[in-house]
Image (cartoon, rainbow, N blue to C red; front, side):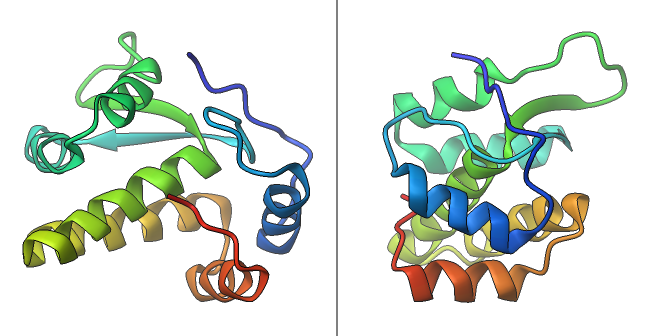
Amino acid sequence: MTCQGSDKIQNEHEFVATVTRTGRALFTCCGPLIIQGLSAVQLALIEGSFHSQTAHDLLWAGFEPHLPDAMFFRLCALHWMELACLVSLRGHQFGDPALRSEGARLLSQVCATEGWDVKEIANAFQWQQVRLT
């Protein structure tokens, strides 16, 4: 399964509205495609936290083998946010501050790539009561 993305979404409010409107079927893409580079340490930390074959498969479906110098992955904004929330959740579950920090860093990085405000995203999802994971 490769993320398809949606270039129509311009800001965080449109993104949340689209997620709310379309529902949350498994593997449904939403938002623009975002390429993120991960170091070997970050990748090991993130993958080690998943405890989910589905999350592992989702991440590796976006692997970009032709980009040099790091491990790059291309996923839609929603799937990046779901993975970031899962990593952070595992950090809380296992009492691991490194995982909590990595989940927050990944979410911030995804939002920064699109010029979105992390707090606006969090508040909008809370207000809409949409679960990411």
